[in-house]
Image (cartoon, rainbow, N blue to C red; front, side, top):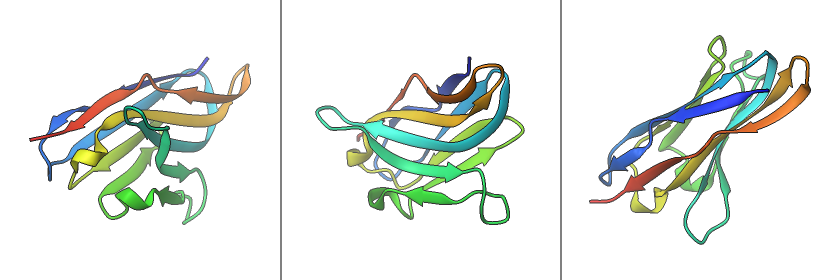
Length: 125
């Protein structure tokens, strides 16, 4: 069973920065994709940023929601099975619960699709 533990949320003023971390633990054989999602009150969950395991000289290919392009950066640490989300120039509309998602293969259960517990990000003055 693969478990994800998130950290790094909190309260920040508009224009500020936060970095979220999500570490996966368990008998992980490979990771195919990692992503960050967010859900604001009364809204549907949306993909914020994703990173795959291959492409761009094995550094992985990334994709971002239009609303965060140029402000957020997703990255990963393969040996630590960890994905990060660096959030800069934060805006009040970025306020939401952020959750990480990791898909891969583990032993002995095979394919997994795990979610973190969610971390609150509040952007307010």
